[in-house]
Image (tube, rainbow over all chains, first blue to last red; front, side, top):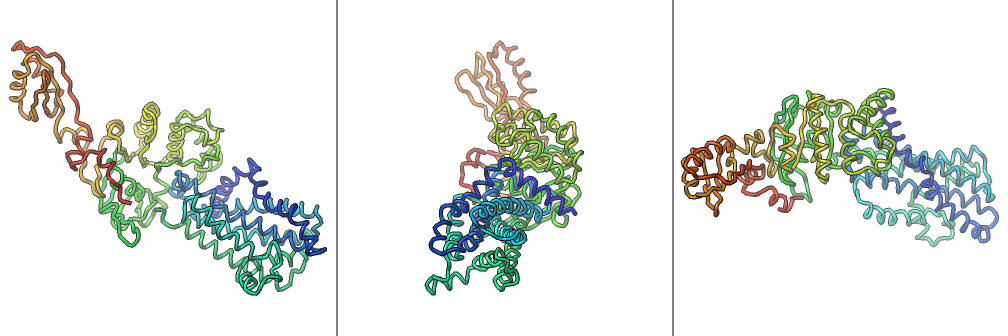
Length: 247
Length: 320
């Protein structure tokens, strides 16, 4: 009860800046939207008819991964000035301090995800409402995990100018290897193997299966398991980092 | 309010142990205003951060506001207010909203939180800024906001870490008044770190001096100053050598020096000694032209205790 109350307060505090100035929501959305509009049509000519069904789930994951991975940037200034110190001295559960922020990130992500899917449908992507809901739920779990991990990294690194290059170094290969831009099936053997090691590959495959309403397919179940496993592991990492002594 | 025994903290940096605090004992009674003075890197903030539950001590024990620091940090957190060196309010938040969230994190119900926040906004001259973004406030306003955040839940004990650093003189005086009223009108016990001597003089009835992780002296500001070297008296007279001879006969007078028309010496309680000396000199026709009595500063105290002035100690490299 106490935890829920404190989490709700931290969630409110974290969400206020972005729901007050929704520009941030659209800036985060702009990357995947630009790919959708300026790159998507190229795929239609090279991959053929079903390219939207294949491409849109990848953009949903790109939105999630980039949005959540940069969540830690909201924490670094609050670590540097005294905000986090003030909150750590307050009788507040460390779990609430992390969970409130993560839930705010997930709420923003879902809002962006809905907007992305609406635009995609206008471009010719078709799926059911149930499938969209399930896909957004999967994306929410992934986003919660990655934003926890981002906070753990931010607590460890603490400086934006070291945090940003580290993130782009990690994210670019992860995104390319997951096969969001082009199918990995046409990759040379070593590249294909690398993409099989990348957990995000399984997530995007599950999203593609879900949006084509193949709910019981192996891809769906494996992707679900990978996403939940990754989410839980990252959540533990984030919680440990938030509860650690801050020297 | 505070009872600390053998509190120590050793940081590990690249496999070497760096002792920051080497075992301190601190006792603070309810309603006291105590200053913790020392150069940068002496262990002031580390000690304070341990007392405020932010750092786990490597040794020692402490009871803070009636709760054991090691076994009941949650109880300590509920009962203390802590105003750190930085600014506690988020720059992207509105003043009142940030305060209401803080009050509710301490368990106040929504209506009570709002009431308490508005009461403090008025008392700290921030009510006109209630709906402004924190980031648009001036340094002095943000510092007052930090204090409000620290006392929203009416703690009996308030820790302040270098409260007036980087403030202009006017804002400092204003802040000092607010800190004094916390004790005088609301009965708070105040424990503050500083390395400003005028801040100690303005706010503290008792000071602890820390250097290199150990408390090297303790007492009232006046007691510490008097115990060291006495007041510096500067007298200009029409016959300086005769005045010097007269001054030298006064008990406890030290360091008598002549510098042109100026006679200088140190004596404890100079404000009582000087009128007597002046009467004696004038009765011999040795008219006094000017007189100046300088109380020893805590900088003098620190210099006598450590062989370094506070400013030199600050300039020395801080062990990281």
